[in-house]
Every structure is written in C-alpha cells, then in structure tokens.
Length: 82
Image 1 (spheres, one colour):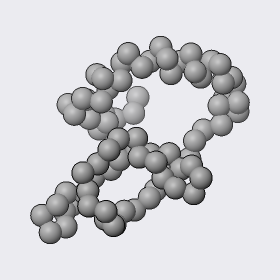
Image 2 (tube, rainbow, N blue to C red):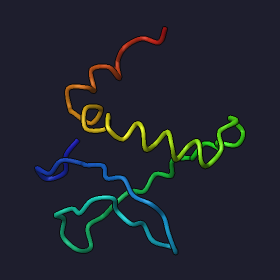
Image 3 (cartoon, rainbow, N blue to C red):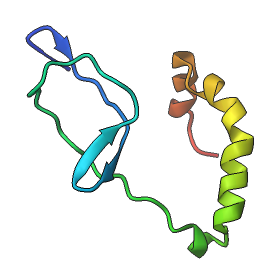
Image 4 (cartoon, rainbow, N blue to C red):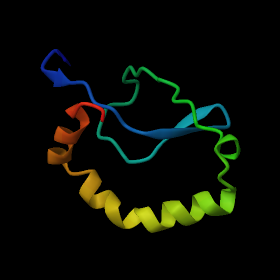
C-alpha cells in the first residue's frame, strides 16, 4: 500500500507517559500522520512464567533475533499450522 509514491511502514514502539517511543529512528518529516495499533501483552504469570524466567528466556533467545528478522524468514509465516 502506498500514498503518493510512499510505502506504508511499521515501526515498533513502547507507550510511556502518554507518548509512543519508537524502537528505532525514522526519517519521516515532523507532523507525519501515523496509525497506532495496540498489541496486547500476554500475562506471563497466567502461563506459569516468572519475570526472572522471562528475562532469562529473552536473554537466551536474543542470539537468534538477527536470523529471525531476516526478510527471507517471512516465508515461514505462511506455513500451515501443524
């Protein structure tokens, strides 16, 4: 989808103190229009995972993020569920 030759893009961020803090800098003009979509966060305690366990898991999985974020990995998004 594009508007006047520009592609729509998504950037992750965090909502804090009434503002959205972007996870990465973007080269867009001040006053650009945006759409914000709230993504619910799972309650780890309901799943039996403590904060310490979640932090340990995030730390151990961080080594894989470079591979997971490669564009060609999106092919796996379309596989049928098992």
